[in-house]
Length: 228
Image 1 (cartoon, helix red, strand yellow):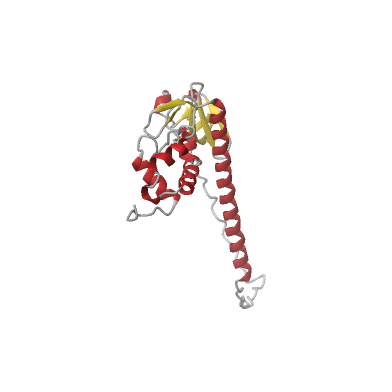
Image 2: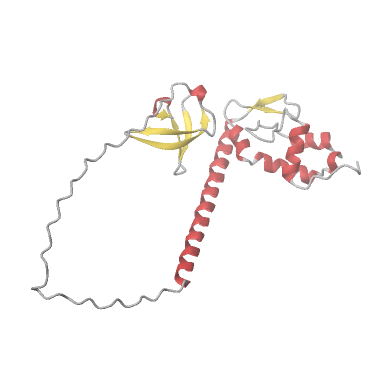
């Protein structure tokens, strides 16, 4: 055990757990809901392996279950699994609602951080523009005006022929006829009258598809209002 390498970060611990328990943890893609009380199972199964401590396991488990891909997997009908991938009961509606709330709050925080970063960049650019030295304009030489008698009459310019405006190109959109072709995270459009708004698939249910618009608002939309 003394010669075993030490895992220094929670990401390294998650990668090790995905390799050690492939039917339970995953290093990428949508994650499966974990059994309630799986932390104690982990302590019993990996005690002493890779010099892992309870603190490291708890931190890695917290990072894993708060990730977006894990929260996407908390959906109606999903089944919890133990370390060996055995089913341990379906998710409660309360857990699904809590996961959706966590996901929305996480996305809102990311959007707020991006907006703050863009605002700081604009402020920095504006400050740099004010401090830059201004160029001195050289005085233009005085232009001698011609006497009224010396001026030549200007020839009338031919009227410009306006080109006929081109009709706008219609965007070809394909309606969604089968919900089975959709996947979580897929980009599509939501029809609203004559307009089509960009959206991302959050969840596919029997009543329709939950999508998130670019404004951050989420809603359930029926298949006939979805297009590619």
